[in-house]
Length: 238
Image (cartoon, rainbow, N blue to C red):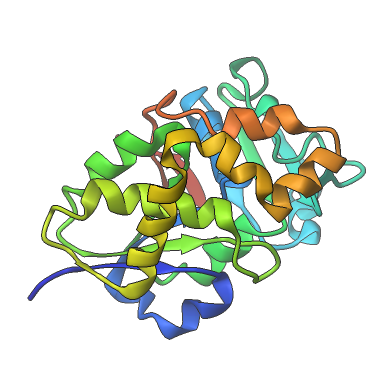
């Protein structure tokens, strides 16, 4: 039977897919999955994604030496070590550490996908490494775009299209959303940064004065680490 390459354009559509029959890739380009990839590349022992700020706070009460990261609406939640800016996930800060992370969109999409055969984290930072690994998986693949508060967004869909571009010649059957995502990638691939300047989330981040985060998250192939969900922790695929 021909394996499928499907794209879920927003987390609210996840129930329409049999995630248990797929390898799932979670995509939240601005900024959660980019930061996760960068943190794992920089030696974070693990990143624990949780849905709610209260769950993140609960780890503090356990007295463990964890870094607690919480973001809502693009800003660090007061009282936490940092949010989801990639500049917080440097070797100096995260090497050898476990980070507990909650974000507005990315961690929610991950939790809705937990029944998948495998869950990997995708970003432009690890694009080629991710695609090379996906080519070795004899499974249906579902690319889950985190979007913004359950709405479609352009940057996650364009990245899904970049993955489709590398996988579409492997014999996988594309759904309509995968074809559409690839069309968006074709429209923007010559200057992704310029193309994505029109995005609503990009505008939100600019108002917060963090344009450098956007530029960082659009760098291609600066990491090779592929974060994989192992139990409740994202760890480096070995």
